[in-house]
Image (cartoon, rainbow, N blue to C red; front, side, top):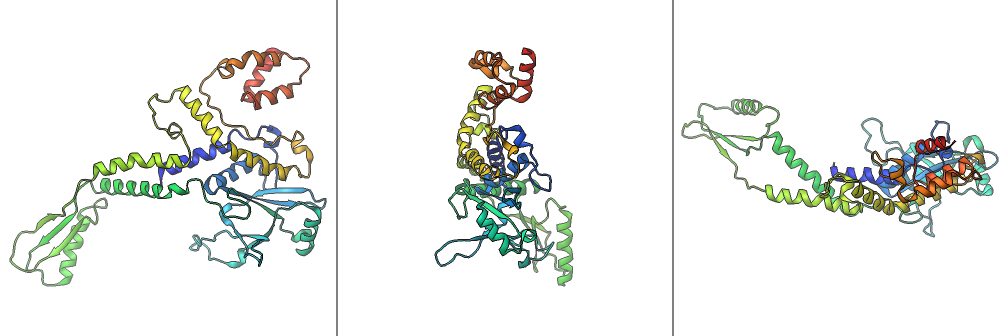
Length: 384
């Protein structure tokens, strides 16, 4: 419910994903029976990595002990088994609702648990697991569990230190919401001195009528009190209030910056005008900075994907062995010359090199110069 926290997390995840894997063929490869592509898998695990600082992949094998299927397992559905006497875990378990948040739709059933062994592609290990689970038809596969806080550790997210501030922002929004819904009017008591009201039923009827008269946006702002005594006209006594507008204003200004610092995120990336509006130079610098901050996350994902897909049933899925993820690039209506800047002459010289294949040229232009495939095709077409 924190708008800054939600925005920062969304930006963080987008920078982890970057522009996807450099190898376009690998990016589009279908990797399981549900039709999921490598690109779609990257999107899913990046969300988990951003939110939890960890992610998990489910893998299965064919009879040749090559990986034949890879899927995403929601990270929050995973729990380690109880430690053995040496303080080690040997299996991991999934359940769709450990937090029992969906019990209104379906009851919590311990039988919904599925146990998996940890990722280990050694053919001897896989063969033993297959035998223990009754053969290939009953084999559940393995889970590659990555935690940013270490092996076999439940990680904490990078924004953990700012959770209180996110809660503060939610509280400030709630206060503003209540004030707007109640027209910024103070609460108070309606005191009724009517002596003719000699039953609790009559009193309740009058109180209900008053509350309904306010309408839904102001309901609950009045307290009704019936006083037995001298007969007078009803009176409204407002509750004394203090003006905390300035205190709230200071908190509203400070809180987003604190949350942004937890993500190490430049304010301009969450839509804050930093004085130069949203100039191209400022945005380019912000992109470069945040690409450097999220580089380690992209490297981690690349390494884990390499572990899995270097053992894929069809080696042609990524024959080049390139599992790198391209960082984001800020572009707004720039010409190719502006995008390349001082590198323009080098690129033109390389494009004219008749000894280099178009495939090699494309790879260099994408990976080292950050050009889009459409731009590259246009360049090559002009030089043909």
